[in-house]
Image (cartoon, rainbow, N blue to C red; front, side, top):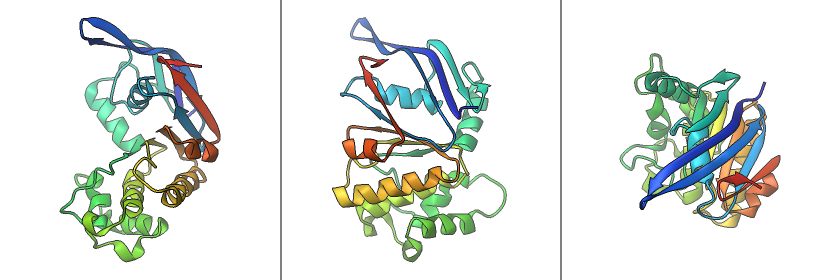
Amino acid sequence: MAAIELIDVTRRYDGGGETVVALDSVSMSVDHGEFVAIMGPSGSGKSTLLNVIGLLDSSDEGRVRVDGEDVTDIPIDERTRLRKETIGFVFQDFHLIPTLSALENVVMPTIFDAGPKRERAADLLERVGLADRLDHLPDELSGGQKQRVAIARALINSPTIVLADEPTGNLDRDTGERILEELTAVTGDGVSVVAVTHDPAVAAYADRTIELRDGAIT
């Protein structure tokens, strides 16, 4: 059973008086523990594809399945719950809260959950090499350290899928490679990683690369 499956997914937007086809009958699947890179020029539909996989956007046609469950038409509250429990997000610009420490940023997605999460957050930060940075604010961290905090935050709810949007985009090459090593490492736990990128280095770490052009897989 695939972790993610898209079947003939089409997504259209109205823009400037015309209809833009962002995704055009896209079919793809990602296995558990697989690292897939999504590449293509700007405007090819990469971000829309990531949003559909991440249940942030809905398709106009086609079906979306997560762990074998058809989630195409589920209600918004169920979509929100499934996204929280199943999917972790890593953003190019980190999206850390500047007034919170590294540990507090990682704990943040669990703020309304029962039970203590600080120990798990600390364990995740130790795993990504930041055991000595738990109390540091984002401004006290390098770009690579911020991205590692973002990876730890993405893993706090034990997702089966991690979605990364240009995870190396704001990093130098050496730091970017360390981040890719971290993303590769989580696949060993059966987590699927899908990374949207312009960076050929990401493709070198991925198990498979999917290329998009004009909303279609080429």
